[in-house]
Image (cartoon, rainbow, N blue to C red; front, side, top):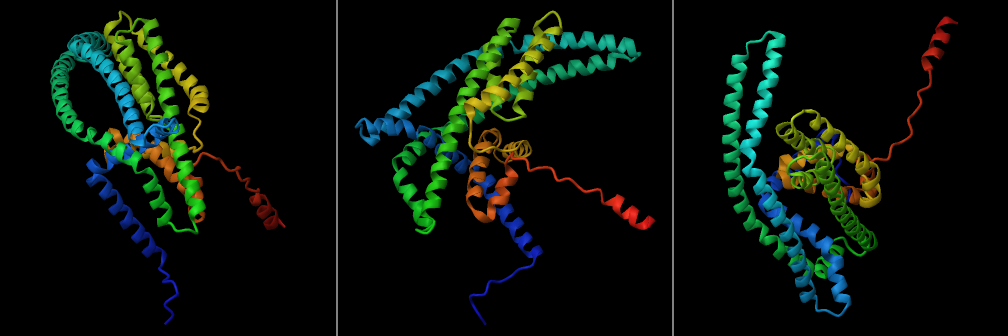
Length: 371
């Protein structure tokens, strides 16, 4: 018996092994998410901050001090943004009951008109509205409490992220050398290329994404301020953050300012103006800001972008939605550099092959039969 001969398995056996392995892999990701998610965030943040650390190192600053300065500056920026966002959110939460009352009153008027026009008993509908209104207020209070509890738990994890980032930046040469040694000297050039391109892709993608979010926030807030919508700055920031989630975030982002417009304005036309403004901003974002600013080398098609965002939410929640696209971009980059996996990389991309033209063979068959 020749030991060198490869064991050939039938297709169903290979498919079964693959599916079991996939199930085990995603189960581990889900079970260990409290460990894995902070590490993934830390690796991505470390890659983004790497050029800043290198800048300080090039001007003859000790590497440890350079990493400390970079993390401190990053903390100041995040703290300033979080403080501003929290102050805006506090003002919005104080006005939440009033907004619910106004929205309910408008909904009452609309349902009264509809019930009269279609000859429907309005009493049942009004009872349902009163019940729903109470549930909304109770749910909002419960949600705030649950959010504070989960926020407290998340803070413990968030304190670990800067530690992870510091360690990753400090041991970067060791980690890179480890990756090269794992794949051997024969694949050294290919591994170096994948590592360099991965760093470039993540840096360009995330830095471009931050610039895009800033520009969209300014455009959204400006449009809402022009229309006179309350809490324009907060709604603009929320819209920009949701816009980071491809295809799905833009739809959710416009719903909240439309509801605020309906609840605070004298006419529902303002909701339509908000919808039109956000649609125009989305056109600018999709056709000008994203191609020019984000300019990622890795292009993911819309189908897998939506699938991976939904899967990321099911696996890791909101964090998974934000991490899904960068991780999929890394996966595609690796697929593109491994010969046996290139078809999968092509499937994830947005390069459309030429449409095959089917020859009209039915006419030929018909002619042969007639002869």
